[in-house]
Length: 85
Image (cartoon, rainbow, N blue to C red):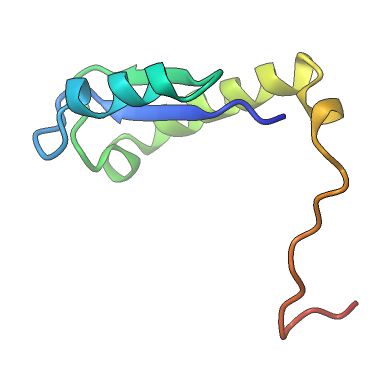
């Protein structure tokens, strides 16, 4: 099973962290919250290096914990018009 990641900038003026990320992380089962101090609403564009480092750390932790073995392998995406199989 995948662990949900909730990512938010603490200086988001558009969607304040207390109104979204804090509540989301509380109600989404097993979610991990990562807040970025001083980061704005568009933190994916303004803090790319920090986001990438945090995402890599999150994924490595998930992988080391055996997360990949818990993924339901029966799931297969629906075929598309571009599918070769």
